[in-house]
Image (cartoon, rainbow, N blue to C red; front, top):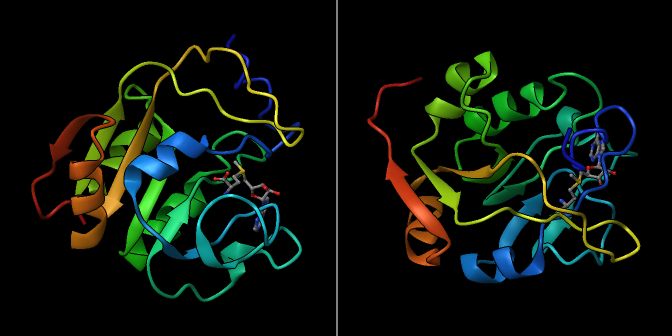
Length: 163
Ligand SMILES: C[S@@+](CC[C@H](N)C(=O)[O-])C[C@H]1O[C@@H](n2cnc3c(N)ncnc32)[C@H](O)[C@@H]1O
């Protein structure tokens, strides 16, 4: 099992690599699942576990790397992200999972980064090579443009009408 996987139900704190965020070249209005203000995701506003980002109103351009918190615990986050319709999310590229075909495919575009994305622990150390790839999901034109121009990997635009 990959290093990123045992954290399901144990720790939600695997942070997005800075270079990935830099490649996106965006400043976000909201990080709805954040360890706290001052974290390196460039967002003007954050919700933490104490706020419960799932229960809050989201506004503007969002960057979401959801907590897992149990089997498929990211699915309600994905649902909210899709309904919100404006931003970028990062999830596992589990293309065989039922949730992937129910939710991830409703994005407007996907980007499969080259190589294995190594997430970062709260102490700043970098995790080992995960056994799975990740995918960035775009909702909205701005998000689509950011993924397209990031140069991070394979960009795929999806047909309209998934949701
Ligand atoms: C995978 S980390 C991503 C952190 C950061 N957004 C990033 O991309 O590096 C998920 C974060 O969500 C936070 N979290 C957990 N449950 C939450 C909740 N109900 N509402 C908001 N944040 C939550 C965790 O504390 C953790 O910092």
